[in-house]
Image (cartoon, rainbow, N blue to C red; front, side, top):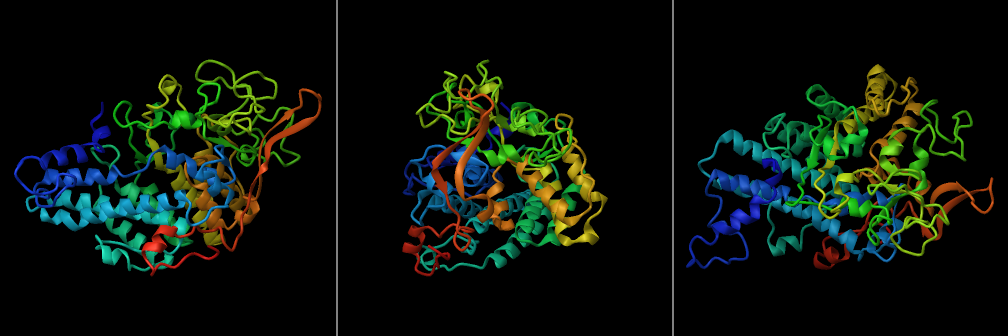
Length: 530
């Protein structure tokens, strides 16, 4: 087992053990007391590890895109379904849990920054580095909080109960300022490469700044930060898109920031989360939808399938498509991990027949393949594939988009190079982008982000910042189009006619502040429409 896989687990075990050295002390045994801690350099390292331990698992990671147009959460009785349909209220437990999750990261980071200087004998370079890591992880949390809730409390220190009940919100603009300053400061004290894989690096801090500034619409800052990552010279596009999301790609130089996992030690269950019902019944929770599958271009022409000149054949819809479709989605005819062929057509007699009345069978005809490794088939609750938070492809897309939004003076060959570097992977090899027209490039980049970053948690934020929610969200769930077995020559589109998603632009570009937070703190103001 690689040592870096263990950094998340050393914190609680080793530190709680230190509380028991003196059995006569009166310090409570159910928490870590500062009287016994912050004594040594090793204590600081353990505390730093504890921040990483808070980072979320695949349940949060892979559900996020199901709140958009490109995926569907098939367990309709769950709170996630309300979020997907935009019928949620401020009492929804997903709305509340995301708030708590990110503030837990902030609390752990702020506590570390408050206390680490108590360690007197400590290497100064190490102290600065660990502080920079904590600042970066705290900024990561704030990026997500602002995109989900808008104006939120800006907390940079431990709060008393009275303070927590009276703190007010800070404007999103001011929090973007804070994020930019924190990540700029942190990047100066971080190495380009860490000895322990998974720790925050200079590239992570600068890459998150590029993401944040793109989200904030500060395109010059986004371009500058993205270019800084590109100029580090240590990241490059991985030659195989398929490998990136399997064990073979874990050491790829494309991966900038990933949540570290290990089988039998710190595992997740993303295989089970996405698996075909015929492999494991009552397991699958999130499936692809028609807007995602339709977004993949035709490979030979580079045109969208809705273009009459694309060469698309609705009777053979998966022929000659962008290969990233085949690495992201299980389509009919694909071989599953057990060696059987996926057949979700009505009357197929398989466990994936879309007409089966079982809640974990795909209603769209497809399942997700991304992160589903055949190596995890025998134990789908024990997956060790690292989950990627940030990779170099996103940096190149950020650079390209920022340049395009800055206007024609910034649109040049470097934009095309960034896009084509992604599209020219050996196992993708899509036609090059050649246009320098701003409108066309904007459309190309938005589609490229959709297909390149699908199921990596970006789509919800892209919809919000592009203000396209009312265009792409409302309606019913649609899936594969197939030839009706009972009526040859007739095409039928699968779907859920009774499952209707709504989107109100005056309400749904932000989640509500959780009811329980408003109940505890009367100084918080609810978002519009809730």
